[in-house]
Image (cartoon, rainbow, N blue to C red; front, top):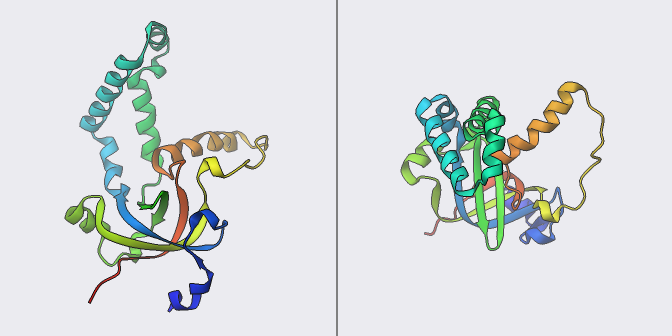
Length: 197
């Protein structure tokens, strides 16, 4: 069994693990099935609700100068921002994600629906997003929280026009659907809950 063979290589303290090492984290698990949401972005009612929320938020925080800027640039209005966001969401990959709270550490993982024993949609219908009990996640550490990552790679890499557009959109994709900046990233190998008796 994998756990028996790899037990000497698995670290339990994320803060002491390096990129590419096996880690085991235990804690509360939330499963987010974003696949179910993909078609929701085309619904007028969802877009209308999001626009109303953005407009209310702007009304609480905006000043006169910001309102003038919104009037001169339609893209900077709440409706323009929501249109842009929904257009991007329509082309982005929607998968299944796990978020684990293990002590003080937050962990994000992308999951593959083919390896679930219970279909993810059934888990959502049964439990919502939070699964009861303490779960264990064994995986390969592939990202640390942004504030702990240190300097990133070269920022002045030259790209084609499409490459430059991609480097602009990919960070937005991560902000909207990917790993939160304060979370570790794990490639999951095993997700399980211990059974007593």
